[in-house]
Amino acid sequence: MRAELLLTALAVCAAARGQEIVLNPDPARTTVEFKLSATLHTVHGSFKLAHCAVRFDPATGKISGEVVVDATSGASGDDSRNRRMHKEILESAKYPEIVFTPDRVDGAVAPQGASQIQVHGMFRIHGAAHEITIPVQVQMSNGQASVKASFAIPYVKWGMKNPSTFLLHVSDRVEIEAATGALP
Image 1: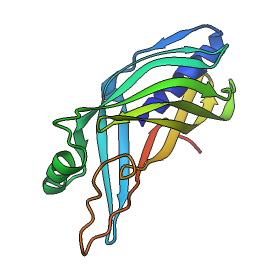
Image 2 (image 1 turned 135 degrees about the vertical axis):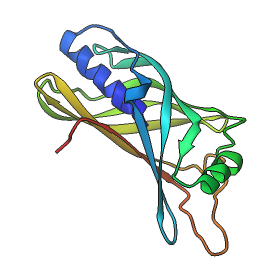
Image 3 (image 1 turned 90 degrees about the vertical axis):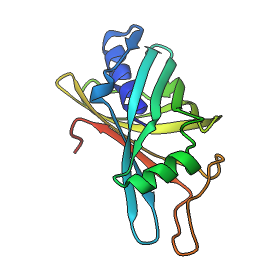
């Protein structure tokens, strides 16, 4: 989710200063996009960040805090599909938040150029927590970071309903992509 991008930006700042950093990003400048493959088309949509408070220690790679996404904000561009997604798949009235709680960053962010890090933690969705490691690309240029995180959520394996029907087959994994800045 977008959380990984924010965590990466945090890691960049922390590495540059060598001290613990606290991150509280502006939800209005944060996006989370999803893609779900289906037989006849691919569904694209987005969610909104509710809030984020994260602390990172660059000396140890230890990271703590949480990134909270508003599950009720999920939108795919189709009102009927959105109602079904919220009622039958996410059950967002019952589980209104998607939370990533990071606990470790593996890898280092170079002060200039490209870097690849892994952000490890617990991903809580639909009332259950799941261990996950998310790859994050970072591009540093003149003190500015461009970041991109792409990963899959095995939502069916994690206890959510697959919306497939007799005629329409839907993937059992949803692709998440979050990016900020321009990566080459």
